[in-house]
Image (tube, rainbow, N blue to C red; front, side):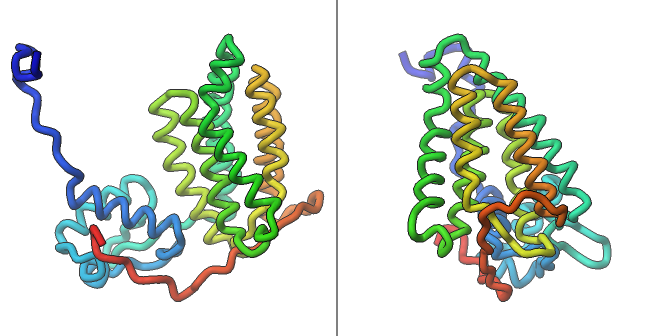
Length: 256
């Protein structure tokens, strides 16, 4: 029986392709994440619309979405700029991440069967395998940005594994804010090249069903991260600096 023969389906609309606004929003998000649009950078509406090949009206609607998400700042009389995560905001950012990621970890670890926990964590396990390969390979110090990307991907996949759409949505915003904090850190964008060790220990606890133990490790990891990013002396760790192109890159046309 087709959908059209179902009486309850008479009000269903045709599936629409992604709108231009969605595509612009996606491209601007990527530009912010990749550092093409650096924290604090002004957004020149006319120039950005020309680079993207879209109307200023469409760009304006898209940027308003990003303002609502906290990724862009709109100041009357001064226009738009990319949001900045200040050093004094880091403790709050990572405390929020601990709540979201800790909740997801406990949900996964509480599954009664080891097979189910492993199944849920397949994508996260694959992300960790990639992170380990990047961190221990000969290119580790040459491609630190890839390690940073893989690290955030692992955190995201762990939250997604909980199967809670609200947690996944919150985590998407927190990942963007974490990248903004890294890009705008006064000490430079520095990543840990040995972070995979902490991730492996935590993953093993999740798979074993020890949610509380895994969250305790995550909290210690986040506390160490905040201390390192704010200049608090601590145990030396292996790090590498991501070299950023301060001139940035031009946005490409939508659909290119």
